[in-house]
Length: 172
Image 1 (cartoon, rainbow, N blue to C red):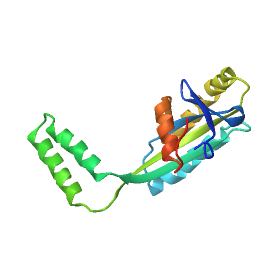
Image 2: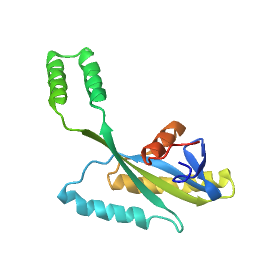
Image 3: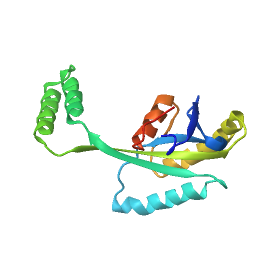
Image 4: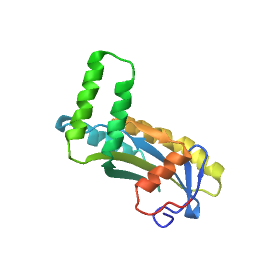
């Protein structure tokens, strides 16, 4: 992991520190697939994201895809079905459970993240100032592009993201 992502520390607020005093933050992107009609507008907004970047700044989009264990899906639907609700809801959930059980195809989970590079800073305080001045604008532009960004501030979530995005073993 230290070869692919040379993380020195993950500071409070989700600020990742790399070798050579480089800093970055991560955001989870939840945007839905774009229709043909929406693509042109989406490209225009993504151009706005790129045009809004500062000098020597980096955005890195990370997309992961892995098998979703069918057992986890079945367990989730079963727990939902066991909760109090209408008979129609229970029938619907039971039908979904049966459909998942019969379906032999692999289910995939896809996740997309963006790493927002904040550049090199002598101190953590300098990186925090950069985060406060840069990240809001980029997240706003990503919202316009309908990517629904959510800044990741939890250390464990960042560690999980880094593990998922590489086949290396994470060492922190």
